[in-house]
Length: 104
Image (cartoon, rainbow, N blue to C red):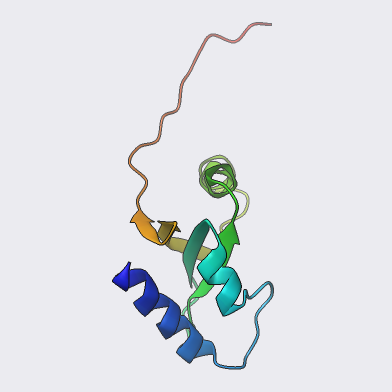
């Protein structure tokens, strides 16, 4: 949990009083079941990671589905770098794509 707290503190220091769309409050971050950290793909001197909150894992899975299915159409603006569930770090442990015969 110390890594989680360290990253939240780093986020709060980096952003200070500045806002970004849907920036959560410190209380929302601490209360959220899923907290994710995102790094912008376009790096510049003002690039800072952002935090997004989710109620369930299915919402995070949508990002990966879009990444696989739509990467040729629209690339994401940020990369998911950390996932925490109840302030414990989680990683993606596998992806499964299943094929079956098309039924016309």
